[in-house]
Image (cartoon, rainbow, N blue to C red; front, top):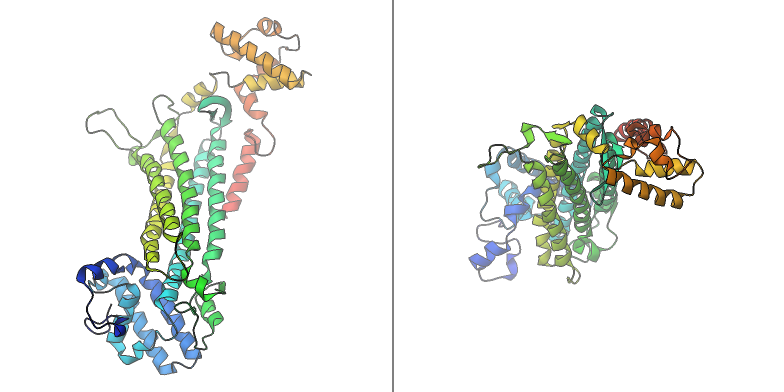
Length: 463
């Protein structure tokens, strides 16, 4: 906050002291301190830009960069170093420590730079790395899905629409569905990353800098793909944060859906899967309980991330150009979004690696509830009956089967022929569970061969 005790970085205009309660309300160091590495990295690149511009001489630049390196090393090795009750924000903290170390030379570093473009740059640097980490976490969850699928390739479960049993599918096909979903999340984050990776440094407060700093060189040093094209926009843009929160919200919505399936399938009523003791909890009252708390927490935290997206949108919606202090509110929402999403992806991968699938329960469910009714309609179509006629006829056959308390494949041939002479002995093979699954052999279907191919393709896509 200060280069000298009690003096703000911006204090020259002021003759009075800030109210202590306002100063506490105004400071952000308690949460933006996590940007210290990004701030130092950006400052080093800016220092080199000032050297090339002739603002600093080589000795001064080396002195500044050496001190910045020591500040970062101290911050990373000693957490108490960041316990500064007076620092207004991380940028003030770093500059104050710099000046303490090297005196007036440190005061030159902020030449041609504002906290407005500095914080925007730091946030993009930080978020870029966190996006890379999140993409990696998504890949870990995808790998866990593939491992679960490979370990249970032969198991068939009911597929559902409207939460009613619909048609049988391979359990591996279910796993691959979520693999595809998380794959879109990875692709989406890569797209967001491209828009994050634009450097605002050099925009100064809002009008740009009058010093001949080579922004392209600074951007290259920091790994940015390009530099911002308008200084007003650069310092007041938080689209990248909102867009990330939007992508994160989709990730959490998907994880919540996966969690819901796992929660349902682990109930006594379904019983398709069992969660290991490593990922479940018990009841303080009921000794028999085994609760899927891990997945319930993931499902619950989705709402938290949706709230952060709404918070960022609402915070930005009425702001005039350029920077406004409202934008300080971007960080806590963004930081918690990153932490929560990465935590949920980690737990999801752990849960997926601690699931046992009950083949017997799954098969029993897949063979009850007339899940082969569509297959019977398709059988009639292959015999020459128009689909709409076949659909209506099978509906009537199902009604009779229900009245008799039998599954379709338990009806006799004579009972089938009472509806259509097209039905022959081969109907029973057509209605078998394996045949019902095996006929879905077009690309993207649940036939075993197709699922096997999809698993190979999925593994290669992760490589």
